[in-house]
Image 1 (cartoon, rainbow, N blue to C red):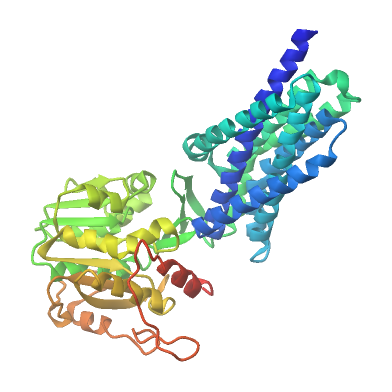
Image 2: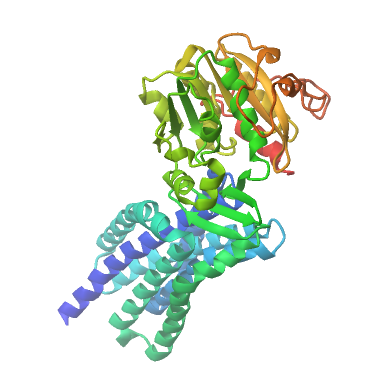
Length: 516
């Protein structure tokens, strides 16, 4: 009898650790889900973590009323966590695909609060049960809380290094739900003498288990069909990498790459973008021996640079190995980038651009910064005065750099803030923009230690779009897109450099793009 009680007590502590692991996984999974579908990772993680913890507080308060049939209460809490949490990602994709804007955000925040509240009820019940079967209150509380905190660390590590990269956010949710369910069924078996109608409760658990198992095997495929609704063209490649969701679509001859839902290029007009990104800066630089590309994992910028015979080495730094691997293996993408990343002149480093510049001693004749827009904290640091100072320090005295700098039409203040930030490093800048149909009017900032004369810039290699006579015209901006920016009160906006300490560009960018 004593052994049986000991086994029950031990499993209560094990259960507290396991459900804590599941809880922290759901917490960060909701943050990742919000970051991918709703954008602005920092905002979504902040909201989901805050709501989850608030829910736990509510749940802990509610748990005071749970004084009877503790085991049955715990079992059904786990059933609900398994069902709601398990189907959370799957349902989120469906709601995003078929409901009006804003519904998906409400759903995510509501589910986060509910699962947090259910998680908050779990621990007090386990503490009371451990105390009820023989442990002192202080000892049972300490042991359950230890299991909870230790489980939190394990859960975070499991999600970051195993579940998300190996299984993705849809299948991971179903798998974690199954773990919650397994804990409930084991508790039901161990405490079967205290529970009436065990067979009925077991049947409920089995039904939930069947649904979750079906989700593991078929949920991702169905979610894929939901996600297809978000893109106008058929998806030919979908991958959840360690860093982002990668989608490649194709409609006839139009190949499009999306990263976390944001369009990176359309094969119909990418040549316009990359002509403007590469050829003016190549003309400004005195030499082309060493070229650095920060971003550009699709290989399209490298393809343009390889047209210059005097280029000796191209170093490409892109954070995500999944993107560069796709650019080296996907047949349609290989046709588009002319196998550029397989060229002997190209060396790829899959690491953060900021860290790469801090660690390398190499200097370059041309530096091309082709990074995603500054829509979150991790990208913002790549649009700061500190980052552009690093870029300047790795540029030859007669060298030049260019930065893709979002749209001067849709995000006017963002564009000119990027220009102001680059000029704060002491470099001379020149502003260029052109129409890229799939993007709209798009802007670039070119910089050098020497003055830049657009009339002297020449395109000396074959191109599909750009010619030398067009470059001076690309430096002309209309009244609604130039650097004289006024606010809603008609007052002139004073631009200031974006820095790590004062990352105001994120807020400006999000405010300007929210209507597009």
